Image (tube, rainbow, N blue to C red):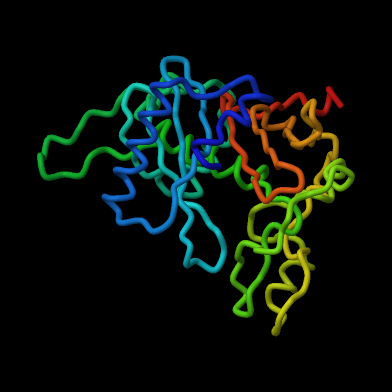
Length: 274
């Protein structure tokens, strides 16, 4: 979401950015764009709380890509220098998925099971010791949350003749009646259902907005909670499994966005709460 719209999520989540974090990120995002010569905007993704300091995460979407895949960057609340979130191997993914304790806020932390630091090689030209660290867990968590939670309103995106996903310029926002239903919201990810996959492969122009996965098909359905503000002008969608994820969409408007403010640990007890 746009950094200037974070306050819309804060109204529901009760979490936001302080002045130092907002201004630090604003400058850091501009610096990263200039350093990598990125085209298009950078967006705020969220904040993962740590025991010593927090992580701030942003992302960039390549406007020329076929699908709006994201490249992530992070910094800590004590050092506003954005670094690319690394790609991780299947081995590191498996390790990260088993950790259920809070983040520390130190990207180099590794001793989740009391491990000791391996000595650096004596040869000064030897590569540094590679091992699983918290930055790899951060990469897994951010991508996992995005895969399961990133949303767009139905109709906000469309396909051009080349099957590229683009913003639907005719989208005028959701009505109040439509926004009360789960079927009004789609996952912002490459489709996983067979119908969506087939539609992307079908030749010709597609006059449909069903090429993305609908959250109405998620199980359990109760993991998604829909509410409206007091003026009934904005709809809010929360995920009860990834507590801290919030999405908003201004009714009868093309404005929408999402952010995550949480500890990066899913709610494993959700089955007992529904």
